[in-house]
Length: 402
Figure 1: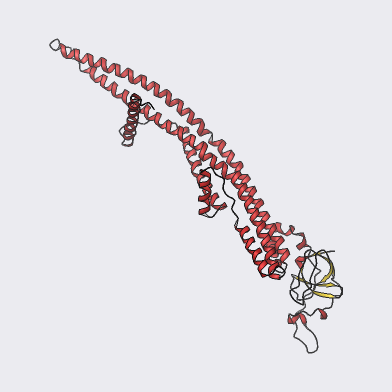
Figure 2: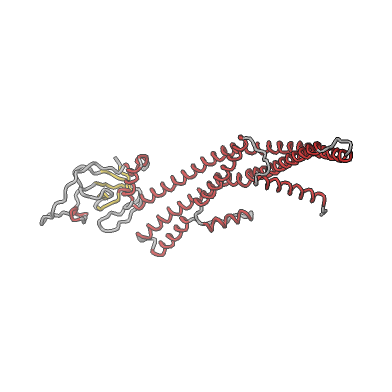
């Protein structure tokens, strides 16, 4: 490697000149070339875009991956240009634990069956979350990173070059100003008296010397002004490209919102399906969802169809000796239940249902049964009949037919 002393000395001189100019500007001892207002607005807009893009990027990463250790690990893999290992989502891990617990408790028991159903839903939720993270990373985070690591680095580099060109320009202006002041002072010194001819000769030589210095400073000023104008135009074009960056980020933001909407819609549908399978706990939730959101009232047709003819509510009366009052006592004896004269309907069973006790009727998917309601019953339950068998059945497991 060759060592160029002349180039090293030149670079050191330029660095020293820029440092002196910068220091004098900070101390208010030197003039500074100001950029036009439009250019300053472009610079402010670019800085604002960079700062907010960094904040949005960081917070989106926190949203997609709340674990800081996992984020650091992914960052290191990206810097090392290695593939990030696949990571199990929290929902998928919970599904695994529930399935293993169901196998230990007995997959045929009510608790085991419920664990399997909930675990399967959690697995589907975890898979949906994984797809959402992948989509958001590709369609939203990657463009933001590309701007910060690509376009913004180019803009920052050109701005530093422009700053150096401005310091060189202002230093040349300062040198020219000093040379002109010295030339004027030397021109005012000559003594035209014949008794002092030597002073006149010396002064005339000094004036000519400063005149050459002024011409040299003017030539350097023209060169530095040309370089400054060229660099200012390059930087201006890059800064005006921030507008197209905003357009690109706007498109990416729409894609991010669409991905997030699809993700939450999938989660909502998964939970609705799970509640239909669980049966006895779903009625309250669905009712609240319908009252809170008008749009939700039209989404689950099975729930909307579970409306029976209105039956007047009979107040609970005290038990009379010799007369059964099973509803008032809260205990249902299927043998004592009589179907009403009107209000019975046919229903198709949507899912298998295992009776929890002797008051309930076990169901098989796709079978047809007769159902009706009794005064004072829980609205989430009906009385179902299949031949000689009779018992309570959950409404959400049924599709009521007209």
